Length: 298
Image (cartoon, rainbow, N blue to C red):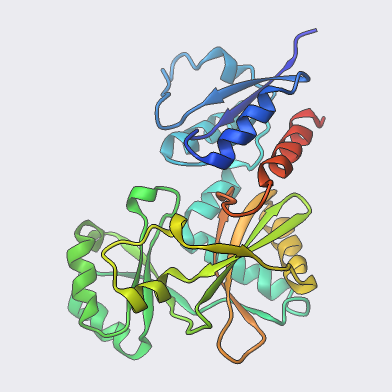
């Protein structure tokens, strides 16, 4: 009897992912096929046999090729870890914001300790008009509308209105695109990253990159080099993770929390599907076990 073919579409240059791949390769109950969305493209009139005949497809989205693969899977009824609708929602910060606000409204009695910052969709095609709009709302963080493409992703803090000009110089091409603008939450300087795998949640905290920038003013910040340490997931945070998983149809995801100074509530400032899981001890074992169970499930 032929084994199930499981396709894992992922860029294989990350330490956690490489360990997961090596462990999945050892599992004899299915045949693992790897696809790199940054290197392996398709003849659309003749898709590769291993993709057309896959039992399931697991995609860690990196670029539009990843999205294209999820569209194909939906069209041909191939089950995927996260479906195309869920991934497109997570890719688009505006769509995600809509979904998060609806989720919080539906569960407000269980999410009293959590808040979503004020946010807007805006354009900088008319810089003077943007400045006039932004002046009474400072400080603000300008974020890219789409978040899966690391080459077109940014978070830019505007404390003084003249800093809008700096944004326009650094990200000139984005002047012609809509941007996502989020209220800047002054906090204790710590970013709490919650990673979720199925019904398990793990916590890592690190210095908020914006606060690192404010202190050191570096030209660039490599967030992967910021020191991290574990923090305990409270019952309230775990409950939030379960609600987000159910409402947004996410199985593997992460979200970021910041805590205002002197307060016991948290602001949810970001969420993404299939994050890096960097900094969690032995996370590759937990991720491998979950993906194995998913691959073998009916």
